[in-house]
Length: 220
Image (cartoon, rainbow, N blue to C red; front, side, top):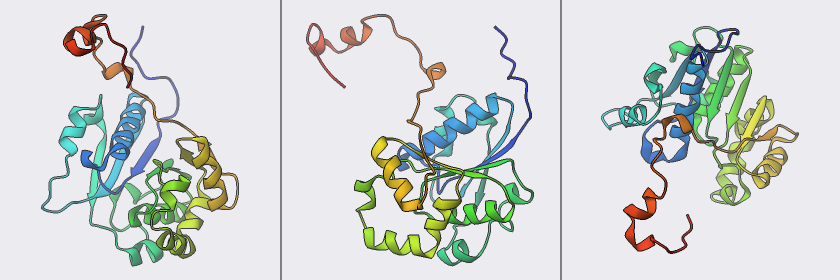
């Protein structure tokens, strides 16, 4: 079977996320994995994230753990302040936005850099999608709900409304996201697993390696 990427237009895609340190949980892993998969398809992909300054950003560990991640371009910019997110764009701070990309993919919801990137995409007339990573589930929305209601009034609701799609992880979040955005924009896209980076073990090796489980039922 040929390993050549499928024939088609080469797109320039920009992902935007607050940070890529693995201690942030799932969002950095998803952003890097999707970006690497797009590179394998032959696209030009950049991840724009905030520079952590003197703190380690953990990107090297994430690259080692993700197939083809070394082929993804990473651009670090200064931390985006709330005022800049509400009234400015990233065109002057991120080289990835010097010209219009084909698509912008935002990761997370309640971060100023995500709002600024959405404003930038609209300014450039570039479509954007947003992966909520669970942040718009009703239970998550209820945490700090007063601040989140204020954020929606300041500009976050407009960010949700103008997205081409908001990618949600479950039915509850999908329904609630449409309510927050004010129209049907949410799509259900559960997280996937890159089977190509997982080494297969011999059958029953897990039970042999964990003797207390041998012959006993278990669940994950």
